[in-house]
Image 1 (cartoon, protein in one colour):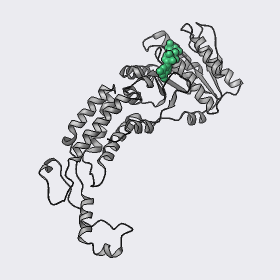
Image 2 (cartoon, helix red, strand yellow):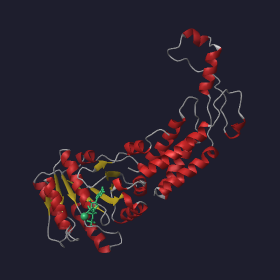
Image 3 (cartoon, protein in one colour):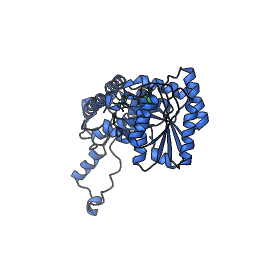
Image 4 (cartoon, protein in one colour):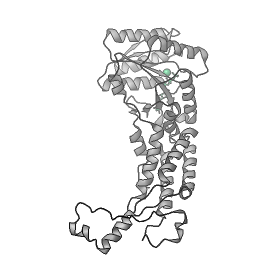
Length: 357
Ligand SMILES: Nc1nc2c(ncn2[C@@H]2O[C@H](COP(=O)(O)OP(=O)(O)OP(=O)(O)O)[C@@H](O)[C@H]2O)c(=O)[nH]1
Ligand SMILES: [Mg+2]
């Protein structure tokens, strides 16, 4: 997953490590000629408090060797913006080449710059951990908190109504089936509404998924009003004490007025608890732009990104939540029912930065 982005982050980390590691590390009173841009802070004025295990006699009368260790341990370096300018520029290019949106790239750079510059690196602190932490914090700041769907469902009155929307062919119907499977595996009961009455074959497609998964699919005729189908699905769920209703809808672009009005009607009629915007990771920046358009017109509460298994770049996954200000809830990682992963920002970032730099 995101192989190309990982490689880019890896090479930026290596470059940053080389830059920062070149800074002098030795005796405080023998500044090296390269110190002009890296101002060491003065040695600590007061001696370092003794480690708990240290002998109390040593605390009173520190020997020469101990003093040196203490001074060196307290030495700090200031990393200036100039030191890391080239690496940050590499990072910027790497992110943009990976299809990370401008706004997210900007946010990541600002955070890394803030974190690294002026940071006081104590001797002995691993340079790699300073850099990895800065990148990790920056990526997490654009990915946001994430959301736990099971907690969300548990917090709402039943049936919890989840509506899937988005442009054509991005994986909405497959995602409805995957989420249905995920929820039933987690002990919840599910009914699906075949809300795509527009595209030929759509009702049959979701019906086949329902049959394979043993999940009830409520359906009307092709061409009928999707609000009515979804309304009936909610009624069915109420009558059968079903926990969750998942509503499939027809693919649409935000500028298709009729279809967008239809979606607005669905919203009014069933009042979904959660509107999930579905798009495909392989669309890169296009997915981000489309998500912004949907967010402006019909609105959304969360995003599901599909076809992540086919996307080495990772740009949409990094940027989409930041662009629309809503959490990424699931990623689709294949065509099987189990190819769905709840999106956990910390796990994704750890994976992106895995490996020694
Ligand atoms: N590799 C991969 N393929 C996926 C994933 N999710 C969906 N697909 C495939 O994408 C294609 C389109 O999926 P659908 O679920 O029909 O997409 P849709 O958004 O419902 O399409 P419309 O109803 O026509 O708007 C199918 O071939 C799916 O198998 C995924 O996570 N990974
Ligand atoms: Mg569909």
